[in-house]
Length: 289
Length: 264
Ligand SMILES: Nc1ncnc2c1ncn2[C@@H]1O[C@H](COP(=O)(O)OP(=O)(O)OP(=O)(O)O)[C@@H](O)[C@H]1O
Ligand SMILES: [Mg+2]
Image (cartoon, rainbow over all chains, first blue to last red):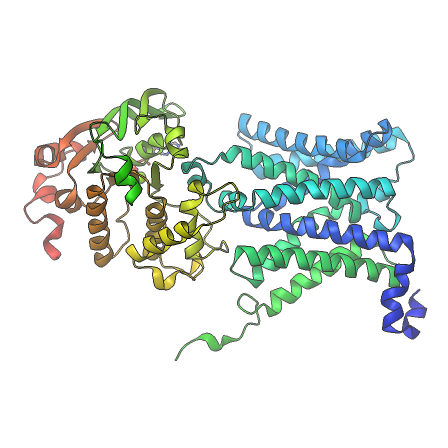
């Protein structure tokens, strides 16, 4: 692939891959998943839930393995374990004096280890590498369907509760004092996180899914002071990184999940350097004389 | 504003009713047998030393800490019900918010209206007018487009007060609204509170500046873990009571004829 690259016209570079069914599918799924995770990433970064995202995404591992072994849709197993890990974290934190980040680290590594053990024991046709690193180029139609349904659920919930969730992240005390049910919002956000982790691992795999859940939000956060613009920027940057990542992975024949996250990271670094207001290279001329 | 007056022509009931409220934090008693009854259209000062339980009392009134005993009613209903009715606005001592959150001052004040909006929180014209009006009242209209993190401490305080104003609640619980604001804002806020009283709202304010209590509080509550004294300012705000509240400090320091206003 890479030798051909030198001679190919830009047109054929962009459109030739689209002649393959698997590429069209991969691009569509990755863009969708990117957009959904990008939207959620705003809430994750503003709420300071990066570690929680990491925890949930690692904890779904045993759920995926068990679901494959039982022959049920993998998303159900993943969701159950994602929510289960969150519930367990909350329970242990409440009942012991161990600090929250310790509890989170403890629970998710435990779940992840359980997943690894199960994979080695069950010896089914699950490809460990697919779960760990994702494989959007080899995604099956039934997985595409699951991804579509879950993405739709996540987007609807996030759009319906957009304002309430923003208020909850910003000032939960005020939310409570005007009669909003904040524990409902808390669990809603955690459920949406579990669902997004499930779709995210389709494209980039369990290990890197947390990047999908925080990097776009962090990038957008550097670019704007308005929440609505931040969500739009996060969605766009995330979807674009996914598309570019899939192309790059096709052209150079490299690992897809890695290339998507790498593109996201590069976009973040560009924002980090050149963001108009918060970049490190911003013009110093704003000091009045 | 109109709604508050319309709805509450009746004044023969209690807006805030706390009956023998006890609060403890994991066994440490913070508040014991605190009782208080406030009618519509009054300003009540809550005075006590650091750690006396003023903030705890506010949190109990808002249902944020669970009283181990006692009964609390706001506008004759249970607290959650009153909250859903947008009957209470609460401005905590420290907002405890993330100041780098990407929202503007306007957005923050608009959050005061969320409870009266539809499920999707789409602002109507009346909501925008309420926000505009509230910002005007705290003189922040010029800064409405600024990110909330780009305000000074005192300005931020005013923004959160504006949010409470925009809510148009009939009960306002303000935990140390005067800390860290300048003289001009202090005056502005005092005028605002007097106006709220005219509109038959009830305001509970905790403060460490005793001259405020003399200047515009109708009632005063002296607390130190429990309500030590409570009633008309003229009757309760005596040197003896203050000595009792602040534990043995010379009364002339606390309530002398000039007091802390001698520099004005
Ligand atoms: N979350 C908490 N956990 C344990 N103890 C607490 C907690 N919050 C307050 N306290 C204790 O309860 C008592 C009352 O505290 P509170 O914050 O109500 O005082 P305050 O009157 O508002 O004081 P200040 O004037 O300093 O604001 C204090 O002794 C304090 O140490
Ligand atoms: Mg206090």
